[in-house]
Length: 359
Image: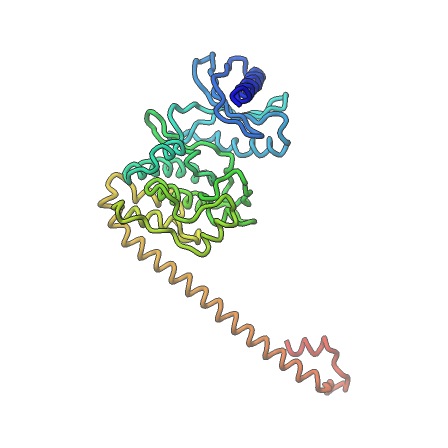
């Protein structure tokens, strides 16, 4: 088994070195970070400026659609120059059929690895991470882009400031674009609208994922049951409510309100933008956040009442229309039994003429 793994490592390294030579002769292989059926993730050294870079590569064997999807998603990432978003230095497709993106290398660890080690974080630690995530999302949302992949594996914790960086735009969508479901994503972090077919991307998708992230980091658990099957997760979200955090954790009411608001099943009831969540976790949140909870809670209840009133009004209008339709149909049946004549020309009316008169 050890020899088989060693042989696989050598083969992966050889493939990676060949690809790097094709892309840029100044690049030398350091190590493979990850490999899937259609992607390489390589850490490399750039001898021209003595920097380390990460290259995400789609090999030429991958389907054309995979190359097109990769380019489309990562071209959007090039426009961001923000401390909480990993810098995308280059997106390119070369004649050899290889498509790649060159990114800055972040010294540190991804959040998923840290969660596996520590299980959960304190409230202050979790809020500090969420603050960095939301600050990055604020810049992304301003460009009408939805990340659609907020997950511990796509959040880097750097060794030096700025400590939080968002990575991986593989699942990004433009606002309003029809969502393409991916089996590569963790269903536990997907918003209800991502689990359904034919829905359009909105910023509320990222807000939901931040709510899951906050709950997960504080409790070490998930607010809903989890499964590898998207259908199961969708059913549990549909029939259930987010589990309350244990009172033993002594979590502030503003933080509880924050994750519950983010996990509203109706996207319209979630915060519309990342900055709406940031006001609750600024450094003075214990003073400012507590004051905002009552106001925001009242606004939320008022919005829910208005939505309920609108739904009731629609039901009443529908009922009136059904009743009026029944009356007209009854009138038509009675009139159709009578031989109707035109009083002037003494000519029987056709069914179409009769319908016009009734109308």
